[in-house]
Amino acid sequence: MRGALCRTSTEQRTAPGERIVKVFDTLSDAKAQRSTGFFFDLVLLAAIALTFEGGRFSIRHGRAIVCADSMQYLDGADAILDGESSPVFAFRKPGYAFFLSGISAGLGPEGWKIVLVQHLLHATLALLAYLTARTLGTGRGGAWAAGLMTVAAVGQLVWADRIMSETLYAVLMTGGLLCGLRALRDEAKAARAWWGAGALLALAWMTRSSATAVLAATAATAFVSLRRTPRRALQACTALMLPVTAALVFECGLNLAGAGEFRPCTGTLGPMMLMRTRAMEGQGAPETPAAARCAALLPERRAEDAFRAHPLDVWIARHRAITEARLSEWDADALFRDAALAGIRANPGSYLTTTAILSGAHLARLSSTRLEAALPEVERLPMIAAPNAAGSPSAGDPWYLAWALPHRTRTDAIALSIRLRSFEEQRAAVTSHDPLTTLRYFVMHPLTEGVLQFLRIPGRFLLPPLALAGCWLLGARRKPLVLLAAAGLADALLVGLTGSSLDAVARFQAVWAATDAALAATCLTLAARRVAGVVTLRPAQAPGFIPSVERPIQNPVG
Image (cartoon, rainbow, N blue to C red):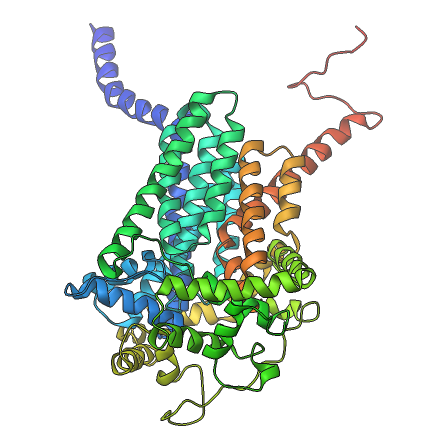
């Protein structure tokens, strides 16, 4: 009887204990542990990234940095919100204008709110770097290194404070590449990942035309990697190209409604090429009809300086081509492009040289200041004072910003430029209170800055080509590396062919911050594993080594 009571009481005591044991058994499962650690890493890394981005936002109190490009984007956003007139996206892509209009409609028209959202996008780059490193084959340590290196790297970028499309484009492009990497890592479950890559890269293409290079490289890599399974290759290319086709039709439809032309935007190619051939090569005016028409549209200068002008002169020429010569945006772009191509044909060697230098500089992540010795720009001439412009000529004056909008009246353009310049003075009230004040002092603390400088060291020396080669030799997943190499080379070639100035190189490099950090962290992690493996095996070769009882070593002879 006593034994039965003891057994009954024991069973009653162990019943709740068994449930607790089952819970711990579930948590100790390898898959559950990986999932729990994965989400814990993402949450903690997001908190760290938001801490630093909050401090960086607070340092400038949310004040925006504006330029003529900002004028064009803001004008498109206003046209979207207006509802009375159809927006025209013949010159700038519509993606960033829709982004600005969404912020204005949801949060308000203040400039600091745009800056705040862009700092939040900067924080997501750290998470994308973490996921990219995990996809390349590194462990949690390497992924954490990639995320923290990205947090440090974006601290040197100013694009979150500028009303420009670089930050949005960087997130979309990096996310699209990440989906492509995951699809190549696991081909059996790649359908959803390919569709994600297609959607994100299509949005990136609607934001910046330079996404064309990355998109083409992704599609080519998918086709070549999956050529042995034609069905999967067809599915991947379809998933990549259908969203882009839909984006192309949507963009052409916007221009059909606004300008009567079913055509995509020019992507600023013509003016940029004209700036490039004159600012870098310093070529004289070739004797072609297109060059003669461009020379007539440029501001009056000495004959020998007509094509060696300040970049603002090209915007003035574009304004005159549309307002005085009555050319459409596409015809004006074709005119400038033909003039630039005429100069290239007249002196192809100089253009090929600068193309090689710019492409190499982009791959090596060289800044514009470090390029000046190898590729000096032609001395820029002073700006021409426009009639009725108050004060000395400056590219930031409302009068000069107004040159960016030839399809608006001068009164409306100057009013928009004055509103845009007010963004530089608007302060976010939230930056004067905690926790943003505390975050500001934390980010500015010398110890914090020292840690960030330390995290930036690997990225300065382990350049993307070296990191790619190291990852390949150290056993990282090959197909994802092929995609990154193809996308990087295609983007570098595009920068070399169409880069308008040395300053443009830094803009193109900034969007690769997360991918560069993931490559460097993966290379370092795999190298550390290789070194650790060598160090672990080395004592076994020493004389007098006694093997462990737990891991007996069999006699190779017996």
